[in-house]
Image (tube, rainbow, N blue to C red):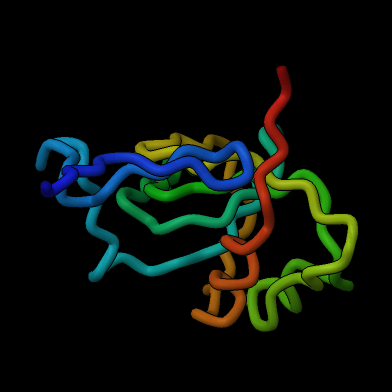
Length: 126
């Protein structure tokens, strides 16, 4: 008997098979640059630049993660090296189409840094 599993829960986090999502919900970031964005009003995010408007200082990110608190000296170092896995890192959940206004800094993010950031368990309130 074959079982068709579409989701799995690990440590209280539910994961969905990529091939079970409608194509309209699948987000490809293959050709998008990964960056860390600092906003004057909204804080710091790591994500893939979907859209950018230099005139209005608005950036739209896919697979965006809000960085509330991180272990690392500067954002430049975090963008290059990532964060310490055993540090006091507090990140939000992943969002798509996340519009960040009042952007004052955009730093290219290395693959190593993105992997370290994604490895941090998101803090969920509630």
